[in-house]
Amino acid sequence: MTVRVAFTRPADKLAESLELAESIGLSAVAAPSLRILDGTEEEFSAAESSLSSGSVDIAVFGSGTAVESCCSRWGDAKFASLFSGCMVASIGPHTSDVLREHGLEASMMPQDDYSSYGVVGMLSGMARGRRVMLVRSDSGSEVIREGLAEAGADVTEFAAYRLEKAGMTPELSRILDEIESGGLDVMAFTSPLSASSFMEAVRERFGGRAGEMAGRIKLAAIGRPTAMRLAELGHPPDIVPERTTFKDMLEAIAREGER
Image (cartoon, rainbow, N blue to C red; front, side, top):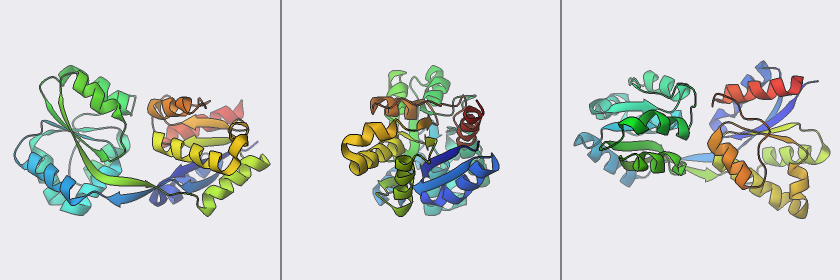
């Protein structure tokens, strides 16, 4: 039986995400989760000043979107030049690939856990006394900041882009319809914020029946931070892949459907 899976992702990633899911053998439906907005002028100015003055020892890129936002603002040449004076760390393979496409090579990346926890584990032994810049969205997990600060790093955050909830869209309404009709097997989440936003939509749509509706489907989380957010919301995930990538999560969902 073909597994019917739904997920929410930024609008610019929906088409390729659906194509990947279907190539794995899943039947998929998706909705935009978050709108990606430019980072503020103040954020970029402060970051440029810190990088130009040599006040950053390690720059940690939390997503490929963060790389693309920087290059959109500065251009590839200036981007590579600004970060050439510090060590560059990437949260995972996709982010490393995007960095490479824009002329910058990541010197560090977690081996298996491509998440905030993986970054903390990778850097905690060398963090003391280092000035670390987190290059990511304005809604990033506190895990990296708190973990590296506890390890003795001086941590600053550079919100290269902002995230805004997409709200109730026709695509999201369709997913909720499928939950109610019993047509959906798995709901998959790629970030803590997307999990919170979706569960908020479930509560708004179903009211007192929200718990019942969420219980009709299996839940998948891309990694530990997202799994923890789902648990905090009262819905621990059924599926969490060993490796924190979207493809690995989809493959774990497909395997679950074969059991």
